[in-house]
Length: 115
Image (cartoon, helix red, strand yellow):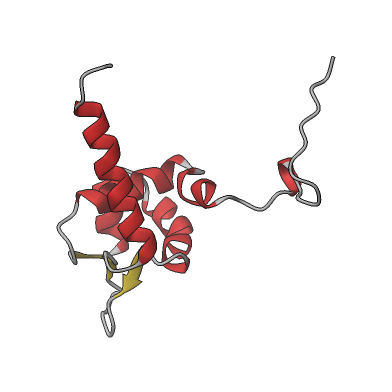
């Protein structure tokens, strides 16, 4: 028997569905590691691609591949007039604020004794 997987009427599901916000961030291990590294850095800390690769313990190629996604959704910004290009975790962006809030909530939940 095959389960019928259907979403809301008129909304695509499966491969045709657009990526959710969560999937955009957590869809690949490299992006998860990059975000985790950013959450561990001091606010406004500048870094280049090689440094982010080292902080996240991933390849520079992975950083190069996924960095545009983090820029597009406002998690990081380029430092103006930096050569080579440097970046910052944009803690003022709405997405970054929500990531920081989620990270804190999950960390607090881990510290609570089981009910």
